[in-house]
Length: 371
Image (cartoon, rainbow, N blue to C red; front, side, top):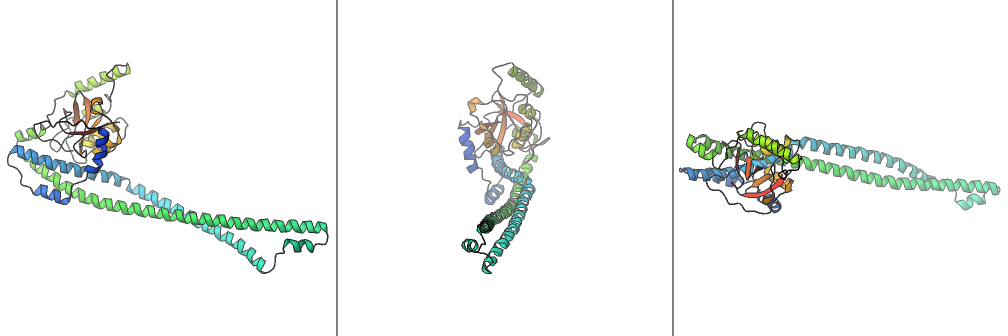
């Protein structure tokens, strides 16, 4: 999303990508309203080098804000589905609780009948039943009958105990389901409010960038476009080279690593496409949107935001990069590009700068990931 706006190349710190990805979560906080206000109210430098530096600051802040807007938007895409699932679980738990309560009520009736029978003296203890029998056979029959009644009473009591436990569990599940559903609704409502606030901030930042860039003279616009040292690439010849390397991979060529004819070819096919905040193709892209779209073309789903793309893949050290690896830039990983081999990356840089190929180390690297 953000770009380095200056003629000099920033030295690369070869940090461990895994550590960089973990650290990004702590440093990728969106700027506060005051930080944005101060930045937008700062005087605009009159010299072009100063203006580029000023644009770099705005671009970095806009990048962090855009990343958060995209992340919240991704969460909200599944909001209806999540809430519906939570509500369905709640209703299912309520039905189970109602059924358990009905079953429990029936068990209580049976036990109440036993208690009332004993109260009325309708039961006879085993000794009295045998003693009052007319003979041995009658005594045996009475004893068997009394044992049967006793077993039935015990079963009623056991059933009551089981139904009590089931009712308590069902009610607990219903309460938990309701809590989860209510929590999800409240959480998403809060995130929607936060999204609205961040979107307003992004609109202000991107509006400032567009105002300045659209006012550039042709010479200044060229300096802006060339600020990362773009490399002219014959895309057709390059893609033909990718195909050749892919063929070599199938025959055991040592230079077989990487997704030559897949994600790289997709990303390279978009060289010259314009930049747009929050865009993920097919014609306009932000930095992570280009990565997301390119991998979509080969049926691979990757996270949508820059920091999540680096955190979600397999960490890769810079001395083991392969074409198709995603490179994360700047503290907090607010920008990404795709490594295409030979020390080059393809990326969507910023407003007014088309998708282009630049040197790998044209921006400070924070990590790399493979999918």
